[in-house]
Length: 140
Image (cartoon, rainbow, N blue to C red; front, side, top):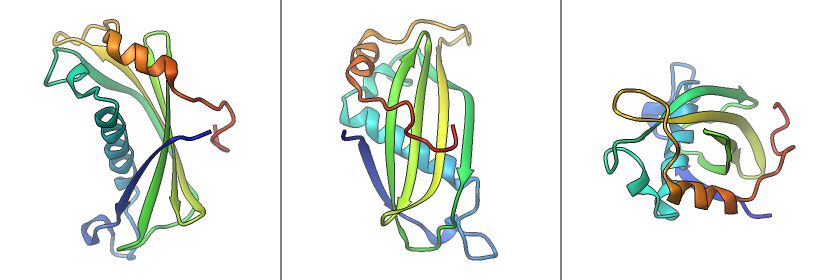
């Protein structure tokens, strides 16, 4: 089974005084991967500012397994699915073949008044075709 893959290098500004990636950056890496996933599937128009709907973060969790350091190449694998009105993303972050982090974000579509709305139909259609493995993350 093939999952969406996003690559990026660790920037010096991502590291802390100990020379490792600061924990807050892992959520940014997930967001970058999620936006790249949407862009590749031509879903940019289903999200703010192209529409009045935004995928608000309802929940997130990150499991840190190993540190990452400046200039290391990260590979972020992503899977996505719809669960009712919620949209769930899971991420596995690797350096080479070593998993260094796992994460999950759950989003809910809201309008400008922050009221829950149905996801855009194009997004729903794409999510129905996505691969999903229940036991993909070891920590969930």
